[in-house]
Length: 364
Ligand SMILES: [Zn+2]
Image (cartoon, rainbow, N blue to C red; front, side):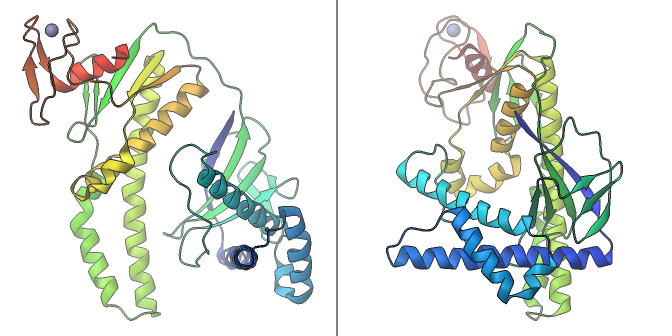
């Protein structure tokens, strides 16, 4: 299976300039090619393959635009490859060949959003505490553990808070953790992040909620500043940094929780939540995106695969909160404010979420 390893890197001023040039060229190639393909589709002509597009586009562009030659050429080719993949994902999603959320058509890239450039093949080198990139040089890398094998690609990322990362894709062999003979059902909720079938309740940090006032203040100030001014860029960066901090707190929590669960249990069962539908409810949406249910599911699933654990999802139409987990009687729908109830059949007293988690564990 594939795994991603991401490290913070610290380019110097000269290297930052070179990176910006590289990102700019990748963006240029992507945007030009996208415009070209869109034009072809409008005219009812099929878009050329990625190989043809590379041949025509980069070779020709390099002849005419000398500045494209000043950066490494692999990331430019990779941009076209990504565009090709983005089109494929979109069309497959339209035809229903691709599962999951509907994929939107590829869009033009902006200087203001996250920037990436991917290197493949043998043109980059990884040292102990440095990476070497063609036409950029040696860059300091921090906190690098040894990669389990030679990476298949390396992507340089600049996020909107102006932080730089090197992200490696590495092929790893799943390793099995020792069996624990324990399984667990998890009920995800808004006030309590996770209720486990053993009765344990886990609260999540709500970093967005905590920083909402600060964020609003930053955004007001940003809106007042003059477009294009240095002050505006400083204020944009302040917002981006706060968003990055919020995201880091959330991700860190979800990583710790999922790792912990995967270590303790052989089988982990979750309820399939239709998060996208719930996020449309505006009242709930902020609270839900602040929690990161979807990210939790992805992290848990990947870690289960990595460590040889079983991961199961039960249908969200199963009556997990209606059924008594003790005797199996279906007591009918319970309003969300009913937090505790007693089964009329067997007399068992239930905490709503714990009962649901037990039912999830049993597959209902
Ligand atoms: Zn009962």
